[in-house]
Image (cartoon, one colour):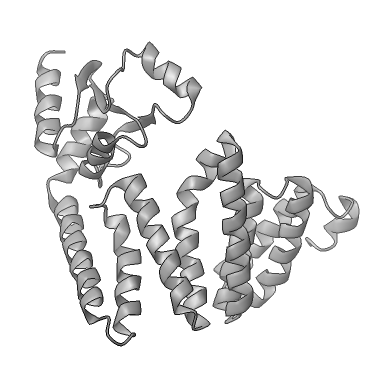
Length: 282
């Protein structure tokens, strides 16, 4: 098995790490966390040496190891592991363009897991700080009305409920969760299927810029439509920026549907009308 493969691959090669990770995933799916833990420890160690400490695969292995430890009730080891992974993410994001794009979307999820481990250890102050940071990052990535904020708001609400004198803050979080759940329900029932079909048929592409508020507003408006249009972040790097310019995109957001450009934010109804209108004029 994976352990025997060590001698064959010289004990610390990339193929060895891959087979350890595959085996560990198999054990985790079978709820055999105790068998997965030593494999993940070994894989993280091998990846550190072969792929490097800031590589996305190395960081994911560390996160999987910490998750496994959390599931095994080893909260202190898990908290240390998540801390290590977050520190590496921070380093990778601040140092290189590549690491930046690969690791940015992972950070909020790891912060939520870190908070859970810290709460299990009774470190409520640290857990709260992690949750607040996750809220900040998710708001920045997806906008303040994104249903992705339900999980951290819910966790903060429960944390405040368990503390004396924080009832008002708890209620505030619970209200936010309620309103975001309503938004989510509207999205999933609000004629999403028909619009998805229209966008797919029109080969829709949305060009935006990560940090631009109007782009974020458009992405929130388009939640639940994922997969029916392609999203291009023109601010991702210089290469993508050049590509956007070559497509004649100079404002964000810009939709291209049935080969026609539409500049600026479009609400869902506007999108549906644009699809119909452009289809008639093909």
